Image 1 (cartoon, rainbow, N blue to C red):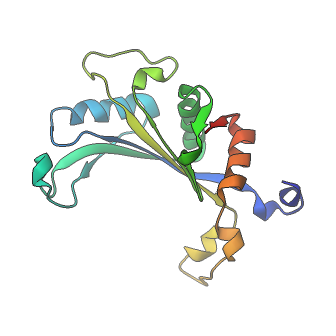
Image 2 (cartoon, rainbow, N blue to C red):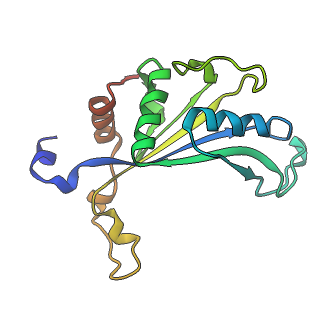
Length: 174
């Protein structure tokens, strides 16, 4: 943290949050999943399709099997705060990976201010948050593309844990 105060390029920021609800083989709950994501995030969801055939789960290639929303900027930060609050401020250590945070919420009624809707039913969701540093764009831009240093592009688990606990006020449970 002492190094970050001197160099603003080492600061960690939230890139995007991806919220996913996987339904599986039954297509009747897809509209409910899409409506739930609209209700929680305020953005229109899109369907996810199966990439390959899985006959043991009665899934064929190209079949709609879930709904997903990608949030960026202010909306991503607000939703991540709400989602971490739904976990009561505790997170498993295995949920934190390099450059990201992945966790699931078993029931959507754990969000504050959200009540059970019989039309939607009881659904859970997965939340994936990607973090990055300033300057990572140089690897993605079209003109004068370059590569950031290895220490700059990767945010370790310990450093990310320190940032998340400070910025979002959560604790890690073993």
